[in-house]
Image (cartoon, one colour):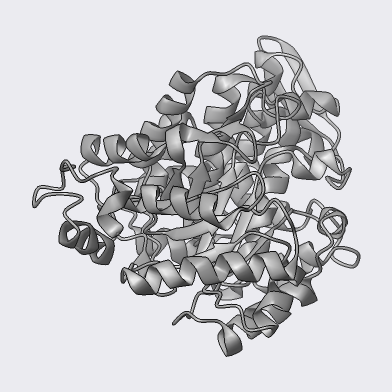
Length: 454
């Protein structure tokens, strides 16, 4: 089957849906890397014209990976709400876009319909949206999850306190942790990326976090972002874990490259419900990022934004507490420069929220990218406007273990004030109790002083 569009007397023909989806995508260096991006703006518009007229049914019938050989596809397909699908299956992608953007279409209506959309359908809709469309549609969607506390309520912007250390030294981790708490960060989670992936080290950091949380009555969740199997081993040894983490990808081949199966994630979710230290019912934490499938040759030669959307189809099966796209972390090979990173961040938050997920974003870039902090400031403010559930909070936005640039404590606070947003209600009350913020939510002289916890 071929797909055609005619512009200014020239016919553009695309041989496959994969080609249509790839060429309709906004410019991404990762798509160019595999020869899938549009040759120019006119070809991109032609691909969007074709995509606009395709139906939900046509997209569902041509997944990016075969049902028989790919467990991600099987999970996406088997989780589909067929009643909702029947209502929309004959809608074109452009009709779906217009309906989502209609001011009369509510969060509840969109999220219900989203359960009848495959990840490829959601990706296709995003390809027809401009940046402002993505912000407008995303801010409509309120997605609340609960672990020890709840996040995602309207008017809130939460943060992950990330006290990473190059050697996982407990004293260094504790110093960074207390400083972050003194700035009022960490209401989404206190989560560390470990330098050492071992059950003993994971357990030690989890106990440190839990001790601090209990001593100072911090209303949040703890997590150490080691491999899912490492965390399960630590939990079985008695480590106090509120959340279980894993990076995920949009195809079985890519998941296998991560050393992860669907059965492992099912086992981890069940273990958390049985032996985790949180209330639930949301126990999982997933991270994603455009380009990961391309980097491990697990993309089935589909564009990276479609494969990213499939990550969210996998994630929603497990009803996670947190999901975030580490948007600029993989590097310029996949997202080159601030404009591409900004676009990807907006796409990811929209696609994730359309899947009913509590989306966060690590607004970040690596030092070898063509980017700067001002570009990330732009994305941070736009994501705050889009209703992103949470962002990262790291001293000065400079991660000394992972060696990349992200959002700092002051960045989060600034965007909260600009957009009239707050931390979660329990955490906001905790900050007032410790004198970190005043009754108007502004920093006091105690903010940033970790000695208040002595």
